[in-house]
Length: 299
Image (cartoon, rainbow, N blue to C red; front, side):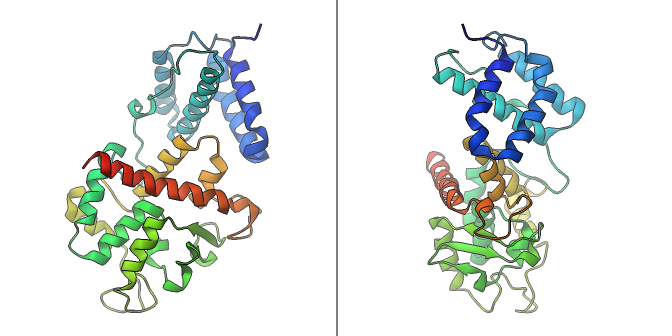
């Protein structure tokens, strides 16, 4: 008879990930689970822990320890362990399914972002922005979720639209590593349109000089004019994409991290094995298609 302990279930699920996550990712997940989850639920029968118990526990971690990002990962681990059990006939339903939308929303210091359900309305507003080049820039923030400085300083020679890649140079990257972004077809179409407005090397030159990038505040002001002041800023699109990618691809955390340009030590550049470039092609196209799907639903 298989043990009903939650610790056993979690261990069995983690064993299925050990060879796909990589040693560092796996070790980090195990330590976090052993520190926060196992002391509370390890010796409980996993099919007897109620949704409310899980909710109260995770909300408590948020409010008492202020570890919002870690809670996102912990809920993802537990949800996927239950999904694994459900599809192996060991539980009839997942008690954590749908819980994260009801937990506290964390707003980092420079992160302002709308709820996911509001994103289609924001996208429609962006597409209707009167200055088309800025509208394209804002939509590229949604699709590609770069750090604002990366898009502001982007130059046309960084883009290969035929190969479908944006290679960000090491000097503008937070980790000091050149980073290739696979371009979904929707982004390529936008960039082809933006090229018709091209006046120099920069994608978004300043009004005062073609040699200087657009000001730090220009995209913020555009969002403010659309009615999203203190609700959405360009950096906040990274959080929205991160949350959805982690939910959808929770079994590939290292690939999601690579999409966000959170590169691990030892990665040398764009096509290094640790950059997971081929897998990110699929992931970035899924995100672009998901945005189209959302817009279709909320037409």
